[in-house]
Image (cartoon, rainbow, N blue to C red; front, top):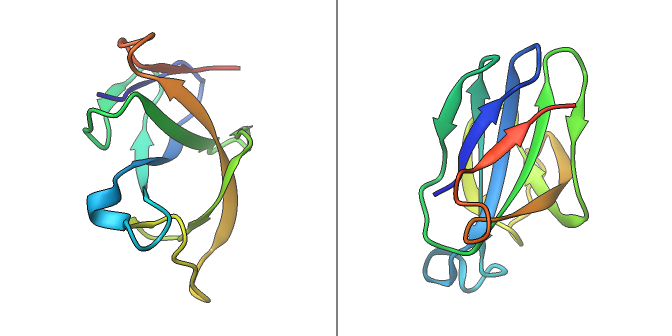
Length: 113
């Protein structure tokens, strides 16, 4: 289960992605979703799933960005639940995500600088 703890000094927004061929088999096998707003020092369970890897992207209200090399993933200004290969002219922007190994680090992700 991907838990996120915000150890940054301002609120963050998190988007995520995980392997879900049942929901997204025809669209890249990966489910994408967002946004979770997490206040400083708050810990939140997002997108419950049992996959080994959960990919994530975060940005803070004060301009910090945590990204990776997986994607690109279409994101929207509003909450979304989609699939990796479903693009849209309504997308806000594309982002790249970093992996979190939920088996090796079951305690979750600590977002900090």
